[in-house]
Image (cartoon, rainbow, N blue to C red; front, side, top):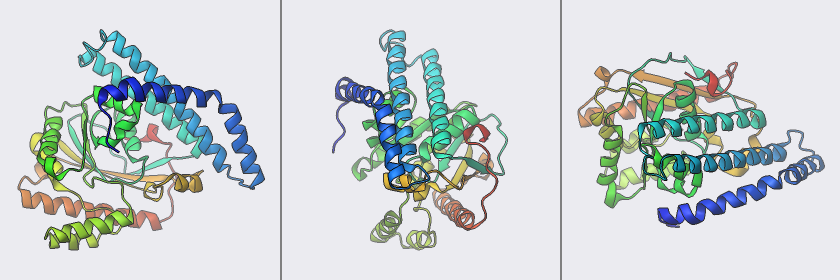
Length: 347
């Protein structure tokens, strides 16, 4: 389904979601009670249904609070006239940080989700380009939460356009320096140029975020990506992708554009595991509460070690993705560490 124009999303979709959210929040006691009775009848001692419903209600509260706060900021900016001013940008980042912290608290309480970061790097200033594997619907929120709450960074994120169906994401992230793109071969160069523009002019507290795989990981998508590489004659890349079982082959166009636009920035690669097993609502329902923590790893590479030649960069990117794949495979079979608590313990 094509994404509606912005004016339709603001005047129709946003108010509709706000009204529906308020109605469901009003029904929260009855919905949670019904979920609890369902769990009792079906002998679900883990209370999955109750946990999921309670989290959904908590998220609806975040949605309503966020939309109302955004409306207030729009008024405070002179009805949008000064929405791009430094003061308004800082206010929006502060709001986003607060909403992520509230969501994190709900996730920890309802799902017992924790994050353990291996060899946690110490925060230090300087622009960074963050390239992360993509797996599961919570991946982006987890990474952005880590950057904002743990690193105190102001992220610039490249995301798929379909996320603009969610009014809170749509309104908030379009007011901040982010870019929404689509998988469209005809407009590929335009999107690459947008990525380069977004990565330009990074400050010491900024973080550019890109998911080079382009999709959430699934085993079916992995096979399709390998077949696509072969179809286009990239047999060497297809062979390398076949050797990686838990990631999709990375796309180099956006990565190269960002590195070229920000030659002074460090590159950070991010790996994590557990979230790739939660691709659907049913997967989430079956897994909660989480018995194992999400494990994550951050590698920070200085600019002097980042290749600039196209072929060398492609080889380097694939080698890092092979390393990420091996790290995931090892962590999925190793004993779980003692977890740190969620994003507050992140770097």
